[in-house]
Image 1 (cartoon, rainbow, N blue to C red):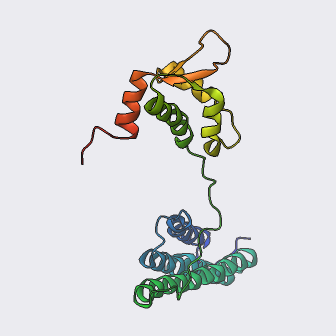
Image 2: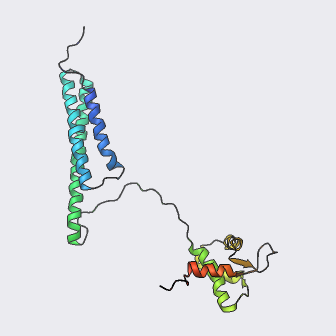
Image 3: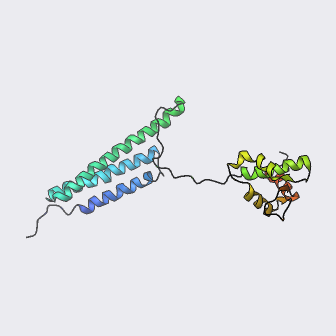
Length: 213
């Protein structure tokens, strides 16, 4: 025997409200609209669609004597009402912070940062390579093209070495043409000196001696 339900099935209405509410929360969840206006807009969407549509779907389900669907949508309606209240409170908190902090000159309404942060990738630090070339450059200024012993270079760049050997950087600078090994036939040169091209590059790009202003 077919059931005579007073209302049409409320499930599509409840799912539409759920979809619109989730769509309104997506920019906030991704951090794109963390402003008082953005939070207020999301709060209104949560109240009208997330809570309103699902509450109507739940009440309609009770009228149709569909206890499972009615209970589910009604419970979700209360959850979306809580989302609306929290977002409204957050928007007011941020608005007060933006209004009071510039005037008070201190933090009155603290705002916490994100719960999860992406781990920053370590960037390239040119200071070590610059220090490795700066030592032969200073030696050249004082002694001309007489080679600088590797032991003295290692001692000069020790504060920038962080426990790493300078050998790979020396080989790179030598292949680039900035340094000249004093004994190129050996596996590890005993001394190095800057090349004329390396001196010109260091003075123009690093020291910027070609700029007068």
